Image 1: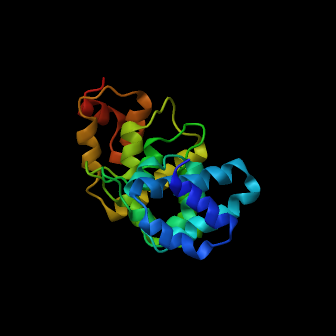
Image 2: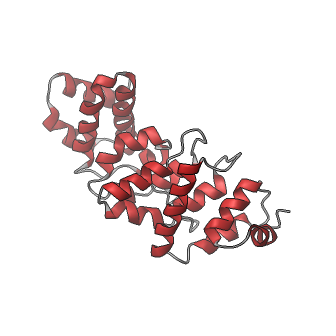
Length: 222
């Protein structure tokens, strides 16, 4: 077990929670990532610890920027849900990894077709005021792609999302494009020449606001 995890466990067992923030600041980015992932893993293993571990994450990230390695490794909706209260403070949703991806980029890009994140993210925007989350939705990565564009370009999509997730995805497209109307062209550039399936063509058409025939011609997929 890494020393950073041993230290974290010791602080928790001795109720020395006020020391966690300073401890975290002294760690390497890799060790910081280990600590944050340990909090999540512990919460997943034992549900009675969920709120406690989540509050520790909030305590740590309220005064420390999340390391880029941690942002890169946060790739599923369960982890996003756990860390949402912590990311809500200190502009955590806008922190980017070395490829310029924020947490939404990484969660959307690795989206599990059986547990999509769009309705959850849309609900956060509807019921919890968080300007940074809205901004993160339109934030481009180093390739100029937004989180939604990353989903369309890279996620494993064998079929169209289920109805409520598809509706939420369309709403997220609208929110994004009100902020960053020029982002659409970047997706078209990435898809050009790629071999894509019908679902990708359909979602690209919705995102680019073109017909499926126009999109297919654009990327020469058919």
